[in-house]
Length: 274
Image 1 (tube, rainbow, N blue to C red):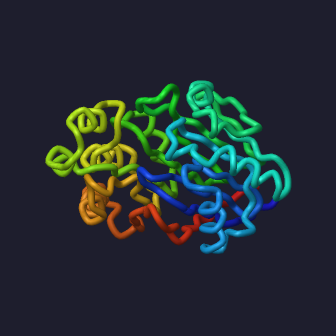
Image 2 (cartoon, one colour):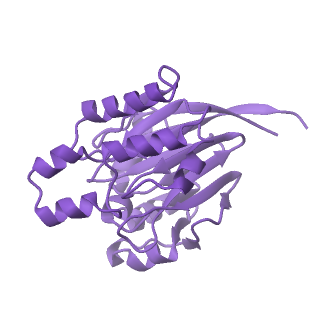
């Protein structure tokens, strides 16, 4: 057997409370992680960054909130018209919680902690603490490269850190600055929900998880799901860069803040496979 290399493309198409969607693929197979913005936006943003012809073999749904699954039904029909029906992978709890208008055809049930394959992509669903029925994050393994998308969780976990240590590219939630949240306009019950162990990661919590999960392979870090009311790109960047500095990875890791209204330029990780 001979060793060959190819690039794994990671593109955050949208990230934030108004909708989330990330593409991961290697030109031969690919997946969308979540579909919380409209089908039109997903496909047009892929085209705008040069991924208009990229394969979409599955959609991986993290949980049932509309900013992660809102386009599922329409997207499923649109992808079927482009070629063949595409499965939507999700846990049983997520499937039970999806609003009826969003339910796609072709649901495939998965279990957190039990890996599965989408063609040659190895997908690992990882349980996360969030206020939904059975939420997960995803790690995608392509050859010897690994990419993880970890958002919508209320606290760091050792399991997530362990999965992160092998990653070459990481999409990680930096949702809120705690001081901004507590002094901001949100009603108190919503502030408490966001701060809870099943809410969203603060910058400080994301720093702690990043430090625990920082591995030697990481080259791309994308700060995700920033609150427009309770965080700023500058605060999130400073927090992430301070952690990379403390972890001896500053300068090695390219850090970007994900955007709500436009796609980030794709990043590419080289992988070797047999």
